[in-house]
Length: 255
Ligand code: PGA
Image 1 (cartoon, helix red, strand yellow):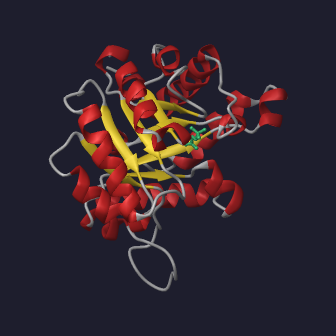
Image 2: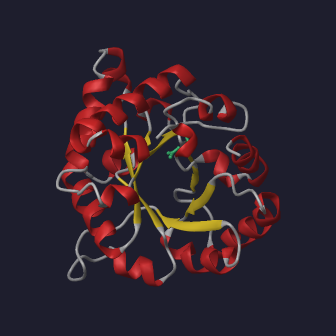
């Protein structure tokens, strides 16, 4: 299998932005702009409270809705948390897991990322598992080791069969929300390292079939160049996903 046979997934990560009414308005605006653009999957990962409004607004369109996190327990005494089953019942299909902001500000570790990923898969959600090095790690030349280790730990115990539903997002932490983007070559190379790690874990077939996105200041200007790379199968887009016109340019670049 080669890149041409892999799905391309363009996913927005709204982070902590937009109220339910704003979510509805944004999707209403975006809908006609991306209509019929089926050369890639289009996903919007939105805050929990926006999910119902987003699912409703996206009904019957080519826009799919995702969440930005999920807890690993099925239910119980976890005040403030949301389970995979709850998300599924609300119409969620995808869920971001282990975003660097979760790791940085909310104590997320590879162990909890792994538990959340397993819980999402068990419920039938498609996890978008985020990995990526911080600036010091890139400067020290240990990016490959870091992303490879995160990939192994985050996917520990997940079967080759389940990997059909897993997306990996390579997000260099130094590029997120900073306006600094990995060069297309850097993105391609590190997504390639992740793919090589998957080949070691699961064999070539799974590695070649897995969608690996790039994320980190992907925007209307740089998307085409990044998405053209062999190992880059889409994008996880923060800031630019809040602007329908910019997000549409990225979707167009992925057609
Ligand atoms: P950014 O965010 O596009 O605003 O850099 C990407 C992300 O955090 O997923």
